[in-house]
Amino acid sequence: MKTVILDQPGHFTLTSTPQPGAPQADEVLARVLTVGICGTDLHAFEGTQPFFTYPRILGHELAIEVIESNSPDFQPRDRCAVNPYMTCGVCAACRVGRSNCCAKMRVIGVHSDGGMRDRIVIPAAQLYKCEKLAPMLIPLVETLGVGIHATGRAQVQPGDRAIVCGAGPIGLSVIEFLKLAGADIGVVEKIPERLAFAQKHCGLTRAYPSHDEAKQEQASVLVFDCTGDRGSMEASIHLLEQGGKLIFVGLINDQVSLFDPDLHRREATILASRNSTPAEHHRVLELMESGAIDVRAWPTDFVAPEAMAEKFPLWLHRQAGVVKAVIDWARE
Image (cartoon, rainbow, N blue to C red; front, side, top):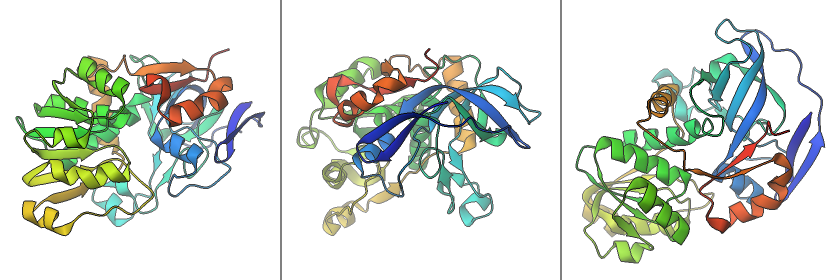
């Protein structure tokens, strides 16, 4: 079967690998339809993704179609989203319902091989039926899950003045749930095309090309940094109101330093936000299928697997104004 392997940073191999075997108990054999590309994939390609080893088959934002099922909950032709977070169920985090930060988590496409191949065997417990969504949009269930979890961590209230640093897919996902919560939203984004996209599609009037410009305005009680950029993460404290919350959503494989008086003067709360939970995925699906969240404009680059080696360097350096790239794996 057709498979793309990331052999080492900066190098993909398009090859043929054996078909997977039959699904075992409570598993399904699935055809991969589409694969979303996110910062994790780009950082793995760059060689800067934490907790990552090579070679690896990427692909954790997946739309699949069931071919063969060994689970009573799924039948052939069921179209599904995938929860890529494989958790242990017994660690301290899992026992209190915080499986998003499971101590033994293994993420499909990160710690184990993912969906950049024609067929994949997946535990049925990781699947969500979503017959109403187009395959191009199904990978965004996982993306939006990051946003709903981050805003939940922040306990957003109606009218809260919030600012989001970074208008990539994760930043946009946070914005969507801030909108639903009734927050007063601003955005900081240095890439002009992304800033313009956030203004147009999210209806934002407070939009800034830099932290320095944002600092000229009133501070925010909630600051979400979704960049995974050290400079932005360290500067975000200066956008924060007294007594506010700074939420780090983006991940960086580096040290981040804050000047302690800036922290203490504000009596700031700093929160990290990691992944999302199955309950949050179900809520995202409900909102997408009802039309309460509309992300049809997000996929701006929809390509075949054969184009990945050419496209990844462009996506990594945020060229061509791409918001969300999706691999059309089922394209003949």
